[in-house]
Amino acid sequence: MRPIVQISLDLTDIREALETAHLAIRAGVDWLEAGTPLILAEGLHGVRALRAEFPQVPIVADLKTMDGGYLEAEMMAKAGATHVVVMAQAHAETIKCVVQAGRDFGCQVMGDNMIYPDLVAGAKRLEDLGCDFVIHHIGYDERRGIAAAGGRMPSPLDQLREVVQAVRVPVQAVGGLSLEQAIACPSYGAPLVVLGAPLTIDADSFKTAEGDLESSLRMICQAIHAQDVPQSTR
Image (cartoon, rainbow, N blue to C red; front, side, top):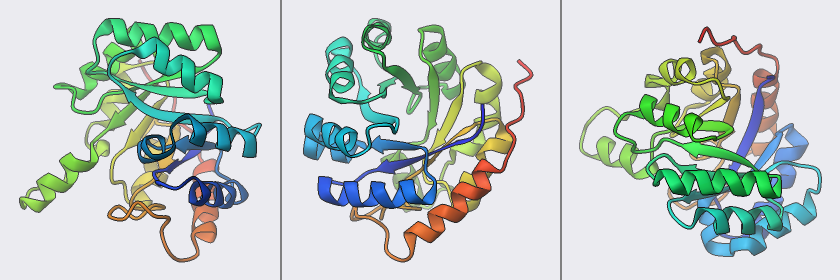
């Protein structure tokens, strides 16, 4: 598949999220993500507002579902989400329920391997249970806590090639990527590139980053879209 650029709207105000989304779409972003902070702040209303404003754009609802999988996926799909997120740490039945709801309501499922004891095994588990995509994810608190303690901040690029080789579904790397690292993701075989904190969203205030964000996003989108994604050897 060709590279896809997704912006994570990790904001807490729907008006700001819509403004940032318009800016992102003008710059060439392909998918919009209702980030977890936006879902906590605005819930289904936030997803409905994004769908009303962008009727043809794929919308990811970053639910991070751990239980009640069918209902959560059903509600978000009916609100306009085209993709929902379930965690590898969830019970197998929860993942299966999200996958079934996705089939029933025309929504694809992204499985997130964050904090799974073995991230590669977590990715494979998600694929085996029916997820359409894998999110290879190093969490916000984990990264910041390790860095604050003086350790090396972990990166999703550390095991990205291993995750890509372990599964057949498309992979997305998430977690504190620099601009150069985000642009490099397709060269690892991961065609879904997500732009969030700290590139487009201030990681401390959860506000849209300052500066000429639209020009920066346009440059990033052009660099990512110009790439070919290596075929998996698996």
